[in-house]
Image (cartoon, rainbow, N blue to C red; front, side):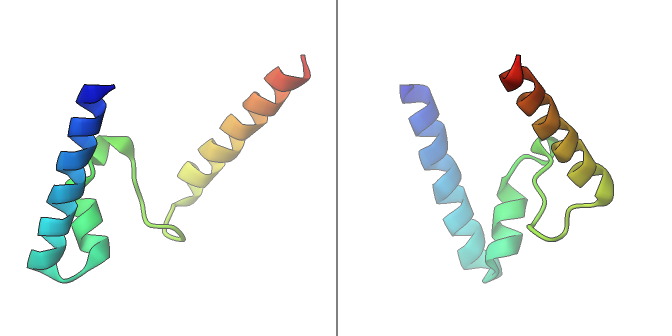
Length: 66
């Protein structure tokens, strides 16, 4: 847990530094967040990522009913 807190502290610090350089929160967040996590701004998700999320939610609901 301590390692996660240190990572989060560093990530927040990096986002703030990026904001100070870019003066744009969106650019700051997405320059720091790992691309492999698939982070996209709200409202900019493509159909395939939205569909994948809907399918995942459906799977979760199916497992809850069993």
